[in-house]
Length: 294
Image (cartoon, rainbow, N blue to C red; front, top):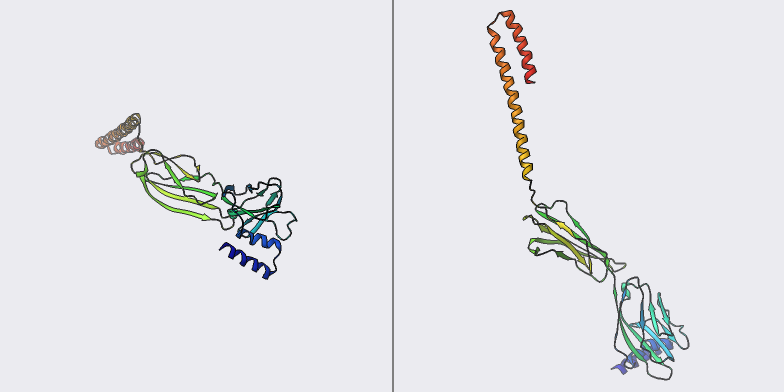
């Protein structure tokens, strides 16, 4: 089967007038000998990763590092003119490595190191799998201001890869106090392929038990916050002081009312005197009433 695909590739190269480099890049991988075990590498977005090709002899005829059938970078003893090297990649001939810089999410995937020694007629292939990651920001935990009966909490983090969900961290055995989760969302940036994730939940505070809460996204944990309000209790001294104050106010009001009543009775008592005196006394009584009861 491999020989048949190889012959078909050679025929297409001849019909399309492709050069020697195209022939070696596209057709040789179908007929290369066994290579080393697959190399697993991990790189971070914006960072650099160095890909080693398992070459054991120094004298190379060529070395091609490619993704599928797309040439990335490499070397040929007679020079490489037919291929365009991928941006942000550097081939180091002494180390037989390819350095990939300014990594993007799209750089992840399966690659091949295809090489041939000058004293051999067989090409060798080594598989490379590159995984790309990006650290999420430290999660932000927002707690609503009203946490009397239930508390709304939101955790959010951004700029990470691959996709990760929010993990809620509750102190002690408080899982029964969760009512439900809402608005679990993940937004993928079309330009960078990075994820923004958030989760909103409601916490049952009807039993007035204060709880410590935090959230984790992609290995990063937010600050711990305390949620739910406790029942307000007042010291005994405050209660006694309040009662004493009320009693004092009522005593003062009672004294004032008593004085007002006495002044009113005194005004009525002078009603049996002379008319002129009664007028004078009534005028005096009215003044006293106004003065005492204002």
